[in-house]
Amino acid sequence: MHSLQGGTPNHALYFVGCVDSRLVYLDPHTTQPAASVGRKCTEAEREADQTYHCAQPCFMRISSLDPSLAVAFYCGSEQQFESLCEHIQRILIDTEKYPLFEPIGDRRPAPANLPALCPELRARLAAEGIEQVFLVQVTVLPELLAATESPLPPANLCVSAPAGRGKTLPFVLPLVQARRRGAPAAGCAR
Image (tube, rainbow, N blue to C red):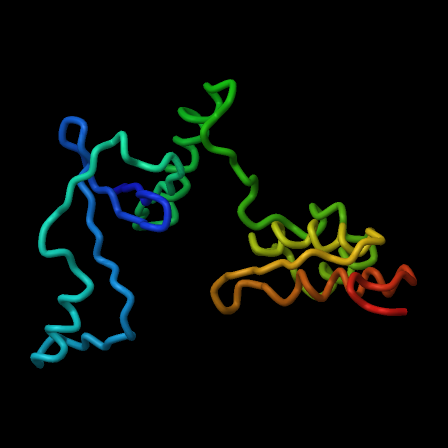
């Protein structure tokens, strides 16, 4: 199962197919308070459930589509996910001079593969049993470590990830690294 998310500026849609030059989309989202649909036994539960579904598909001309899209694939198992990644690599990346997709490498690399992190902290993470880091850490750490080296004030950085996905560590490690080197951490006075 696969689909596209896109639409027009400030209006996201969920595309599920096409007919001639028109895209078929669902627009099931309406800003509303969270609702419990339970087992849909009561009238209130059934009404709440209906607000999360489309009564009918809608159509949009392909030419009206904003070029920025998110591609979604459903993988029912880790094996299906690995197979999808291999297929994308082989068909959509390896064969193209300027590929549409860019791999991020190992989904959870070891701390030893974070060269911006000083060797002492990499060793300490390994000693604490941290053998892999999360994607948010791989993404955010280089930005924040670079900020500790800059004489300029740090830029704002907003990070969103599910609970338990390692958002705290990439903010703490640059502070520790800057202190170990005797430099003020970005945004901190001496």
